[in-house]
Image (cartoon, rainbow, N blue to C red; front, side, top):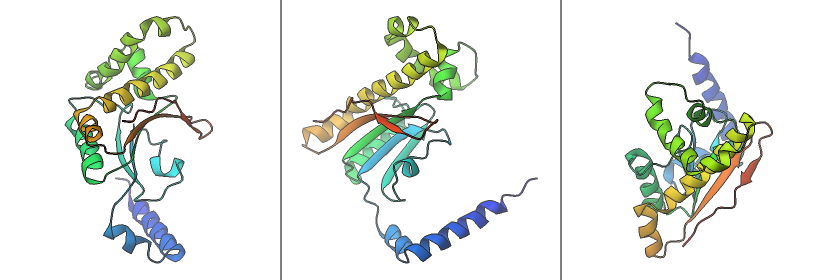
Length: 198
């Protein structure tokens, strides 16, 4: 059995470094949570929400799943959105995908992947909505990258059409839903310019 002691050692080093740089950091962090941002992103370990936006713990409320899906029957995701909107009063909801997404690639390859195929069906629906445009592209990397973008756009629409956002907007709550895409090869985050607000 391999040891995971290094995780605890790394944690102690990190905590000590943070305390040296900002002695009140953990005290302040433990007393409140008031992020302005909800991040809905992919579970991919290469896409760390706080780090890539240069934000500290406590500044971003995060939900992650395979291929950054917002599905109207997913009570986990909807509960996160509801808590962020109703309790935390976030001002921005960011749906962020990334190029080279394994979930998108798996949805496009028409192979069986087991249980996850049920989850990937939602991505296949996005493909169906945009079939003509996607089928005109021969290069698989280009097609996959476009699917990553289209998937984000569809998820922004799903967040915006949720009962949670409709209610918040009807109550004049200031929230904007954004769609971003992250490039793994250079670490750059791009705005897809599909933001939705009241």
